[in-house]
Length: 85
Image (cartoon, rainbow, N blue to C red; front, side, top):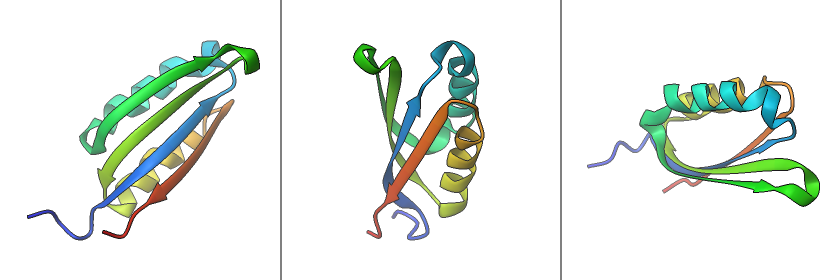
Protein backbone atom coordinates (compact mmCIF):
# COMPACT_ATOMS: atom_id res chain seq x y z
CA UNK A 1 0.00 0.00 0.00
CA UNK A 2 1.25 3.50 -0.84
CA UNK A 3 2.34 5.78 1.96
CA UNK A 4 -0.28 8.55 2.38
CA UNK A 5 2.49 11.07 3.08
CA UNK A 6 3.66 10.69 -0.52
CA UNK A 7 2.02 12.90 -3.13
CA UNK A 8 1.55 12.46 -6.86
CA UNK A 9 2.26 15.60 -8.79
CA UNK A 10 3.76 17.48 -11.69
CA UNK A 11 6.85 19.65 -11.75
CA UNK A 12 7.50 22.00 -14.66
CA UNK A 13 11.02 23.21 -15.35
CA UNK A 14 11.73 25.99 -17.84
CA UNK A 15 15.36 26.53 -18.78
CA UNK A 16 16.25 29.82 -20.42
CA UNK A 17 19.97 29.13 -20.83
CA UNK A 18 20.46 25.49 -21.76
CA UNK A 19 24.24 25.72 -22.21
CA UNK A 20 24.72 27.14 -18.73
CA UNK A 21 22.19 25.07 -16.77
CA UNK A 22 21.49 21.76 -18.55
CA UNK A 23 24.30 19.77 -16.93
CA UNK A 24 23.37 20.91 -13.42
CA UNK A 25 19.66 20.28 -14.05
CA UNK A 26 20.38 16.72 -15.19
CA UNK A 27 22.63 16.09 -12.16
CA UNK A 28 19.85 17.22 -9.80
CA UNK A 29 17.24 15.12 -11.61
CA UNK A 30 19.53 12.08 -11.36
CA UNK A 31 20.01 12.59 -7.61
CA UNK A 32 16.23 12.76 -7.13
CA UNK A 33 15.42 9.96 -9.58
CA UNK A 34 13.74 7.92 -6.85
CA UNK A 35 10.70 10.21 -6.86
CA UNK A 36 10.49 10.75 -10.62
CA UNK A 37 7.93 8.52 -12.34
CA UNK A 38 8.30 10.05 -15.80
CA UNK A 39 10.03 12.86 -17.63
CA UNK A 40 9.44 14.65 -20.91
CA UNK A 41 11.78 17.32 -22.21
CA UNK A 42 11.27 19.50 -25.25
CA UNK A 43 13.20 22.38 -26.78
CA UNK A 44 11.03 25.31 -27.80
CA UNK A 45 13.13 27.11 -30.38
CA UNK A 46 10.80 30.06 -31.08
CA UNK A 47 11.40 31.24 -27.50
CA UNK A 48 14.94 29.78 -27.14
CA UNK A 49 13.98 27.77 -24.06
CA UNK A 50 13.78 24.14 -23.00
CA UNK A 51 10.83 22.73 -21.07
CA UNK A 52 10.89 19.66 -18.85
CA UNK A 53 7.74 18.12 -17.38
CA UNK A 54 8.19 15.66 -14.51
CA UNK A 55 5.61 13.33 -13.03
CA UNK A 56 6.60 12.68 -9.42
CA UNK A 57 5.61 10.64 -6.37
CA UNK A 58 7.25 11.84 -3.18
CA UNK A 59 6.84 13.47 0.19
CA UNK A 60 6.52 17.23 0.38
CA UNK A 61 10.07 17.33 1.78
CA UNK A 62 11.43 15.32 -1.17
CA UNK A 63 9.58 17.47 -3.68
CA UNK A 64 10.73 20.63 -1.89
CA UNK A 65 14.35 19.48 -2.04
CA UNK A 66 14.07 18.79 -5.77
CA UNK A 67 12.30 22.03 -6.66
CA UNK A 68 14.48 24.10 -4.34
CA UNK A 69 17.70 22.84 -5.88
CA UNK A 70 16.40 23.34 -9.41
CA UNK A 71 14.99 26.78 -8.64
CA UNK A 72 18.31 27.97 -7.23
CA UNK A 73 19.97 27.59 -10.62
CA UNK A 74 20.45 30.66 -12.79
CA UNK A 75 18.11 30.61 -15.79
CA UNK A 76 15.80 27.93 -14.37
CA UNK A 77 12.14 28.46 -13.39
CA UNK A 78 10.27 25.75 -11.49
CA UNK A 79 6.61 25.23 -10.55
CA UNK A 80 4.98 22.24 -8.90
CA UNK A 81 1.46 21.01 -8.30
CA UNK A 82 0.74 18.13 -5.90
CA UNK A 83 -2.50 16.17 -5.59
CA UNK A 84 -3.92 15.15 -2.20
CA UNK A 85 -4.92 11.62 -3.20
